[in-house]
Amino acid sequence: MKACTVCKMISSKDHCPSCGNPTSDNWSGLLIITDPEESKVARELNIEIPGEYCLRVR
Image (cartoon, rainbow, N blue to C red; front, side, top):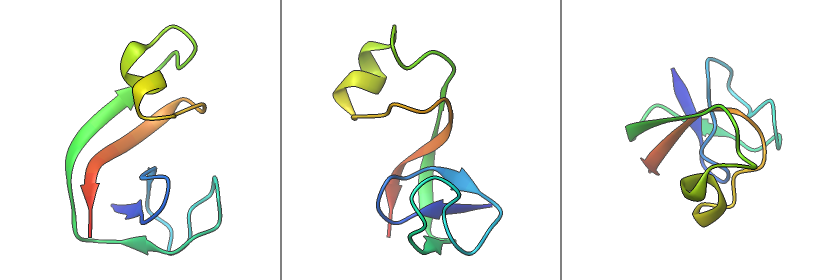
């Protein structure tokens, strides 16, 4: 799995399906957002789309 270097969404692709930026294999921390409208964590991290995200990407 790879994480987007900008929005931190996790996918298996070389470019993020959400924003189109490049992805990286070097990431840590898994965060799963199911309901971004009700999630305080999603609001704090500016996540608007449900999915899997990382906490840190390099």
